[in-house]
Amino acid sequence: MSENHRHNAPESDIALRVKAMEQLLTEKGIVDPAAIDLVVDYYETRVGPRNGARVVARAWSDPAYHERLMQDATAAIAELGFSGLQGEDMVVLENTPEVHNVVVCTLCSCYPWPVLGLPPTWYKSPPYRARIVREPRKVLAEFGMDVGDDVEVRVWDSSAELRYMVLPMRPEGTDGLSEDELAARVTRDGMIGVAPV
Amino acid sequence: MSAAAHPDLPEGTPSFHEPWQARIFALVTRLCEDGRYDWDRFKVLLIDEIERNGAPDGADYYERWLAAAERLITDMGLLSRDELAARKSHLADHPPHPTHAAPGPIAVDPPRRT
Image 1 (cartoon, rainbow over the protein chains, first blue to last red):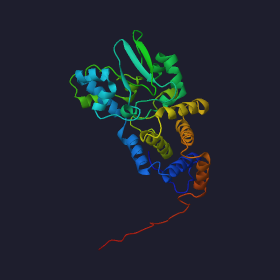
Image 2: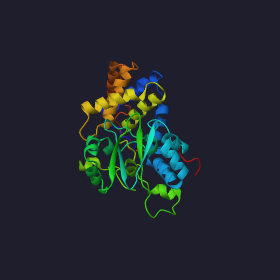
Image 3: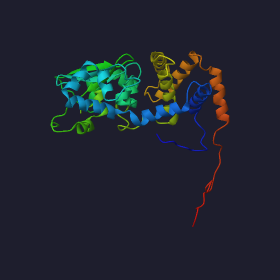
Image 4: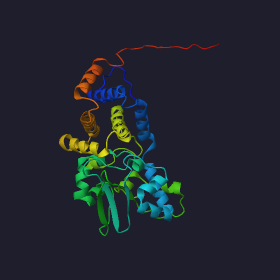
């Protein structure tokens, strides 16, 4: 985000509402603006899909880690240093040649922030939230992902209680790759389940 | 759906389009991490805001987030609607950077030696 410092453009109504709230909460000692700065910095620069890609690459490379990830995803993800708000109750869904998983939050925008960052706009849009449930294959095709007729598609609804992340299938021809090289292949959309990896 | 369903941002692009979006997001998450309220309480308000007032394309997501935050803060009794409205109109009347034009540098620190 760039700080557009246009001195003579009046601030928007909505920006003023936010500023009023922050100022009042600060004056009452309820929040500390420096702490708010840290949160902003954290979500803008330190969390994002690269964290999830590290989890996936480790699971592809290390069978013991893979097992821990499938049994207790929250703990296995925390092993790599990723935890926090919206990452407390993680479940990892493994794609196989027979089953393809895709994640949505039908009610709002529940999403595993520590491993995927903040959700993309389309994830929060009502059309995605409604249609991926009704016609998942068609929506996946619109993302450019053709799921074979012989593959079962499972759609999972993330909530405040459980947040899902997809473990994509390891691509063919990647046997000799290092964990870093594997992580570079993993995409955010692959971990939501709307793209192959 | 077409456009609405497709990734509109390259990976790693910040999800905030304007500074206020990041501020309200951070305020709400900070208060939760400080133990001031339970996340579900905010989530219920956010769902309600999205269902009642959300734009069909979801483009107003952080506006809904702000509306839910205002309800949360006032429901908790941390601030009142009147306080928020009064401060907002004060800020609107007193912009931090009044219109001005500086045709040259506004400060100069000359070389120490030449």
